[in-house]
Image 1 (cartoon, rainbow, N blue to C red):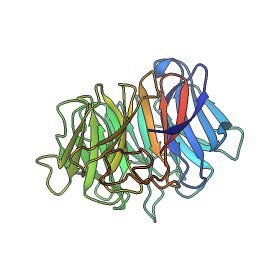
Image 2 (spheres, one colour; image 1 turned 180 degrees about the vertical axis):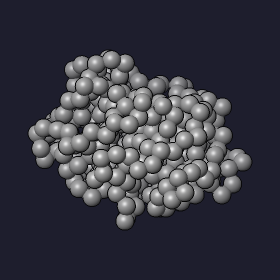
Image 3 (tube, rainbow, N blue to C red; image 1 turned 135 degrees about the vertical axis):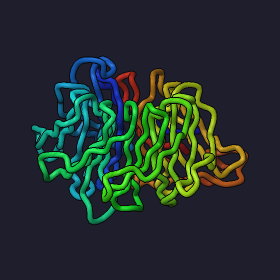
Length: 333
């Protein structure tokens, strides 16, 4: 695979999450922490990316480690982070100081935060080590609802891009759960792995398809209409899978990153689903995102995936962030 790689080193910070702006091409937010998030403070980094590299646009410090970040869906300058002190922070990149607001109701670390993508609602969902999920309206100073049911740490919460008021969560209790805001209750409980589930994501093209990534090194796809068996299982990682993301452009393509230091690209519709393994990191790879502005294309029926001239390639823009004080933005060709 030929690829250009852009690197930004951040001394004294270890990365946890990265997310491209849904508005500005090349703008990227990264949540980072001191001392691997065990102690110390955190930093939100706002980066701009172009052909010459990564440039720090703005940074914001917080008094505890930051574990996740999500952009607003109605304001290009606003985003939310979550941290080890049990709080969520609302930031405005147009201002040099912040945060605009702090929401603190969780009683333990908040590991996941996501802003709803469906029209007609501006809601944020957060998942915590206190085994609860909380629903927030950023214009209101307190949570709207608390969802209980998980029996261990909640690692991931993600809104459905299709169904208003519906989100998924994954937990150390080895389950994937689908929730309904209208009823304030759980719709589906999936015993998805026999290990802690660190990440989940919703397919952008199928409202019934959710993928999970777990400590057992496997990725599993679940059809929510029938959850007795996974519709696919992807094997190849050698340590726990920290994050998984579906492609915004291709229904069967996804990316995952792992504590095995790798980022892997998959097409679950293929007999040999592993498309590529990227090994630029030398530490745990924790955060991953695919740009909404840059289309991705993986060619069918090619014996040399990403290998010119045997396959036609369109840029695949990816950002990943790892424990090694380094942020990588790379484009596979």
